[in-house]
Amino acid sequence: MKKLVAVLLAGAMCFSLAACGSGTADETVTSDAEVAVEETTDETEAAEDETAAADTEEAADTAAAGEVTTATEGVLTMGTNAAFPPYEYYEGDAIVGIDAEVAQAIAEKLGLTLEIVDMDFGSIITAVQTGKVDVGIAGMTVEPDRLENVDFTDSYATGVQVVIVPEGSEIASVDDLEGKLIGVQESTTGWQYCTEDYGDENVIPYPNGATAVQALMDGKVDCVVIDQQPALSFVEANEGLTILDTEYAVEDYAIAVSKDNTGLKDAINTALNELIEDGTVQGILDKYISAE
Ligand code: GLN
Image (cartoon, rainbow, N blue to C red):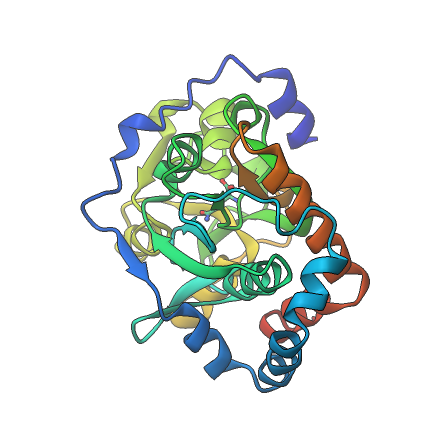
């Protein structure tokens, strides 16, 4: 239902990406991401060795591989916001998580080296548009306003917007959010939906999910609307919080690619669909998301 609302309201929303910070100040280039990814997976390590050996073969298997153009030759530069566990987060100095592993698997299929650049979530689309990064992979929802600025690949995961409340809150379902103060992460779909549904005056944007959850802990907001998987991580890390049973919105996560680089988008789709069909993507999701 939310998706439909989002579609109908497309264009009415001004997604002020530029206003959300240039993202240059706190950017970190993680060149050792591959190493980190390898460190975290035993199975993937074995798979990677195999893949490395079969690299040329793999690349030849993947239509369009070898013809792709990227910002830096031989490198797939990924923009993300590494404060979104389990999709992307820091383990020491390295960015790890579902997106880092999916990106690594895609890069290998395309014969490219993965480099991850950490930036504000709100800067990612602009970074893709301007060619500063080749792809935005950040648990990013396919959304009409974004589609005006970038292309998206096929979807690789489902996202769900949920509501975090303090235990014992009088908010029992999304129907109780009317008139409440809602904390969100700026530039996200949760922020967009909440301002549309409950008005700007009732929604407080925070730089990232962790700061929104801290505001909830401090009693500055009544609830936080955010994607389910980071919500589970935040609730696990902070006592006294719970997630409402009702889902606020169900979404598709995909990879943002420049509208000027359809060759790269097509090559990623080919690689991604191979990785979906052979179970690699599901394996990565299962590793980070426990079935409940
Ligand atoms: N899925 C949400 C969105 O695309 C949040 C993503 C994120 O915060 N990394 O807006």
